[in-house]
Image 1 (cartoon, helix red, strand yellow):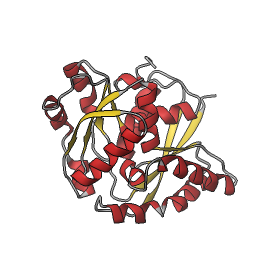
Image 2 (cartoon, rainbow, N blue to C red):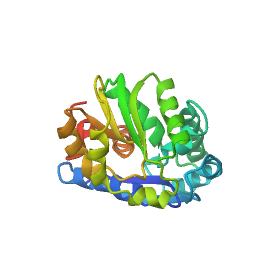
Image 3 (cartoon, helix red, strand yellow):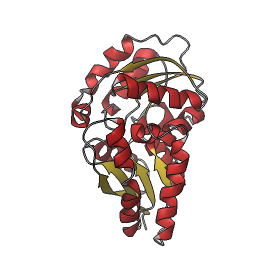
Image 4 (tube, rainbow, N blue to C red):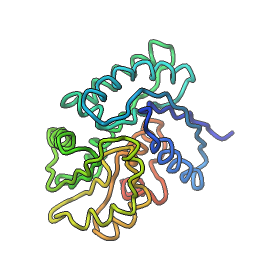
Length: 250
């Protein structure tokens, strides 16, 4: 019998990308591996990507974890990188532990992945030391993300803030713009390009193009989250067409 896995996602209410990109990757994997996936979400309110709104939203994540554990999901993904990073350095560890405990208290223990923690872990897996980052946030929030990643042991050699405050507008940013944005960055000495440090900014269609254009491995918050979910489920982290991290090279 084919093994079926339930993927739970804790999603900002205005996020329209996480429920398309992660299923797209896991559905692509279904073409080459026997496992099957279903997708289940719980939402926390957020419209503007501002520190105050992000903190209020994060406070709702416990409720979402409990709701998803009612469905006995096999893994939970917290789908907002900047909300975690805006709560303080290293906060992803605290969040993952607390939310996993919420599932345990509901008699439905499941591993919890945050996109923030997944991106940090992915950069370690890829043995990156020096990176470049593209993010959709306003400059102060982007600087906060850059600092968070630096504190995790990486050198950020170049970064771009696209300065889009409205979360729905972030989702409407055309991924076809990303290769041009990266072309304007200084990638000398960069080990890995983080094409989207945000699970709301679409990037999947541009990953292969930017890898070919730069000759460097490319990762995104959504790709890192998918990798972490597959590892948590003890499944081979391979997805066709999803960049270096999910190519089987790691």
